[in-house]
Length: 145
Image (cartoon, rainbow, N blue to C red):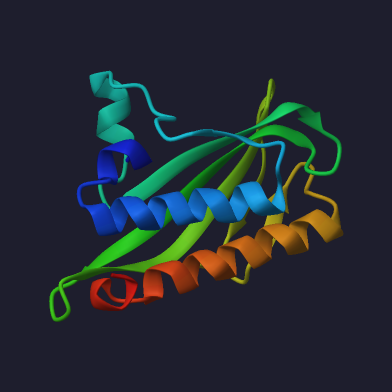
């Protein structure tokens, strides 16, 4: 679901902003899109309501990432005991004019797969960002206030 639509509280909006800042600090050229999905019914039927989706766009094709845009999807589980949303994993897709070129998932082995994959050094920086996203959402609402 679009990140802009998931910002339903000050605490959660702050965490989304922190995620954006983590990626912008590591990759300053990125342009952020908090509404990567259109609002038509066909698209809405495909969107995961338990995720935050953020589009990240390079000014042109990144030769290090082998793509022009990243789609970051942070997947959540609503913990009924703590009333918190817990991150269960992240998926990132690298896209260019031909479509998806690669995928990265923290759910299965933290590996890049696809036609072309990012250069190892920037791949490691992307993994670092993902580790930090887990840390951002591992803090309870009381700890982040």
